[in-house]
Image (cartoon, rainbow, N blue to C red; front, side, top):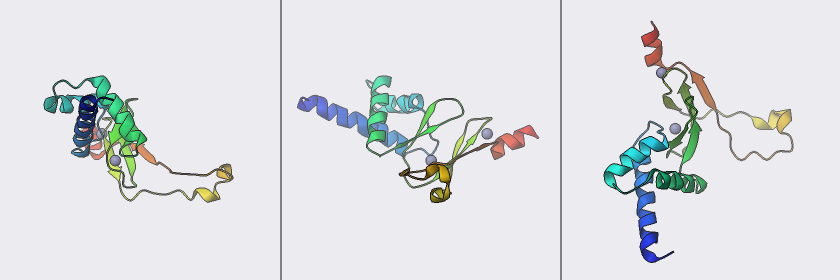
Length: 132
Ligand SMILES: [Zn+2]
Ligand SMILES: [Zn+2]
């Protein structure tokens, strides 16, 4: 890759990562794109997607599947679970991450588990208040 293109690529990835680091809202690629565009007007949605994939493959960020069937992103790599509201789609962090003692699960005998993810679903406090 020519030097110039490489530098641009690195700068774009930095902006995408930085946008994600500054929020706890577990945004979608579209939201990240809107934010990134304010700092780098020529960035494209495709570039944002590509960089999110690279960052995920490098273990810098993680994906969460929302109730809106969209992929959401999280730059917080500390072990934690998520609560997803089925009414408003909000995604909250849950600390500490509850762990299933997978060694005692007979269906996992012989498997090597590298990570586990727990997602809670239900109605968040704001939606519960609204329903009253
Ligand atoms: Zn809600
Ligand atoms: Zn999170």
